[in-house]
Length: 421
Image 1 (cartoon, one colour):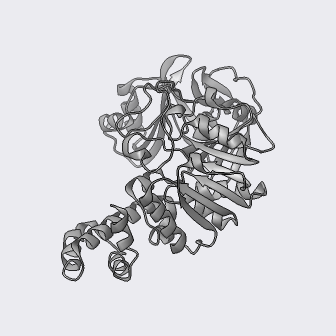
Image 2: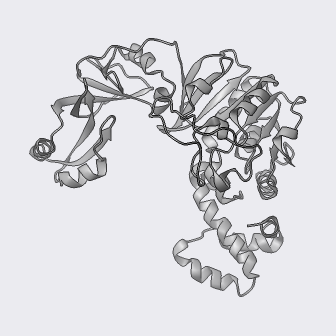
Image 3: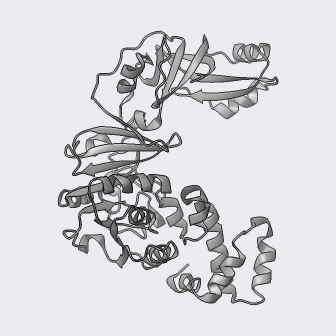
């Protein structure tokens, strides 16, 4: 879609076609398109159908009420910040006293909209004409145009000194993914993932970029820009290498509903050098005390699975201190304890069986207990859960949680159920 095709959707005729597609049903798309083309230009109908599809995809991130009024590009839906995460970050900026902010690499405007709703006046910058047109239309559609100025420019050319804060969300995909973002690519190949395995390669063929210097713009540019502002936040992938985090930044990992969404480097806060894990929708934050890793030990009655944001932030030791726990293996982020101490930062399971991994034994045990519903979790195991589920061929009325992992280096299966807490 080009700018002209998009702007045709903003006309009275375009709005009428979009309204007709409000409850778009993919199964009836051919019939709908045929009907609409009788009275409207084919190009307009095609653009409207594309927009209807994107709005349906966007519901998961923005909610039905906003998604049905907003406008998107395919990359914009993919890269946009989830509304709950953007609202949380906007509140943090507002709590810092930020009243004006430069949103660099604004995309379709998800963060700018959240900031405006939090009372912040926003300069939203992107270098792609279509992306800017979409961001501007979103501000209008949600009644926030008086708080958001959309400017088409290269972010390197923007003077951020008049603003209280800067927010930078670089493109982290190769190929088309970076088309709407300003900046270039740096060296490739230096990779890693906090709390996870290192990955090879910098970028390629439209896939995710793991080297922060291959972001567009590079992380080093974003950090230099952040240092010149009273307050700043830089969005990064959850697997941001720890060696890329400046000492002056507070590093925060955010999960929503248990899924880790992003890492954020904050500048101008009261906690430089601190690590934080924030869990949405509750908004609870665990601040790291840089505790040493707990010693491993035998599996007790209770197993704790730390939230992904806790693991990415390397705060498993902090959770262990809260629950009086120990690791089940030096390389596995599962904790175990003999007493139950509920914590919002980990899910607890009561363990009934600790057995060496053996498919036949597992199948026999589950059948004996009439287990028909099994939740399979794994960490440090090569077994694929869906393949295991297929081979178990379960029947029964009971439920069980099976954890595939390593205990003291040995492949192990833990059976139990979620704690009642």
